[in-house]
View 1 (cartoon, rainbow, N blue to C red):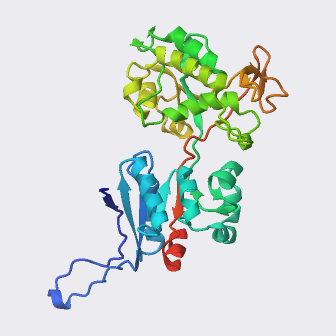
View 2 (view 1 turned 45 degrees about the vertical axis):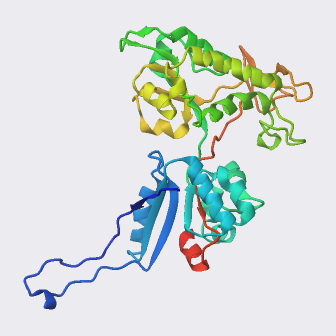
Length: 370
């Protein structure tokens, strides 16, 4: 069975003086405001996601204690996704709100598992909605023209690097995967004088069942996707043929070098490999989500840039890699010394989003939308 750990967010009671000198029966105290409704939130026990901790108490206060937020969490994404999908398929309505990566939407929407938020957002939050990047609001948060989820943050993978180390060895931020690997090779195993620590060129956790597919897609898509998300990066949207061929072979070659000049326990760790090693000033290059920059792990030394790109892209007709040109890569960046480089910003699991269960009462839906 599935075991849930329930987190009760603090209730906000309106209390008067709680002590008095009179006998208990005649003591005049103010009765606490009891909640008139409970909103059940279902999410994952993931310390990186503090959304419920921020939103729950605020909403309870906004409702003057009349609404209680009850959060149930599970320990893994597999369980999170399967429970949300089962709720939709069976029409259970066990929870009112889901906080989840939006990648689950395609499995839930056909069963009307998420409430259509279009009218509510257009009537109440249209200005704020239009302030969200189009890719998130029109693709990630919507399904068949209906708004089914509300994005809480955006997750694009970025390059992170130690500026002090790159400056010392006269390197610029890598623009391509080749430059990434070249830098990793040059610095790996060296002792950095400023810290007297042995350096690791690259630090990317590759534990199975973790974020490995994200790192692979970030590299592969820089070769397979040149005209935006509408053409696909893993499958050709014209006929759903796989976009692998030489691009996948090149991706594996790039991984081989990253691993060779990488963290010694990459195959045994997940995200704890990436940024902690950077914080310890032992790692030179890594990939991670953009909001990691906000934690200011190494003040004044942490650099952030777009994820590297590729000078070669996939010819979809031949399955071979060819040099990127302005015609082949209309969105590429041109550099005087290396020519055109194709980039494919990758949203990984799409960030954290909120959805209202489609199988609860209209009254609960209205409250959950708020």
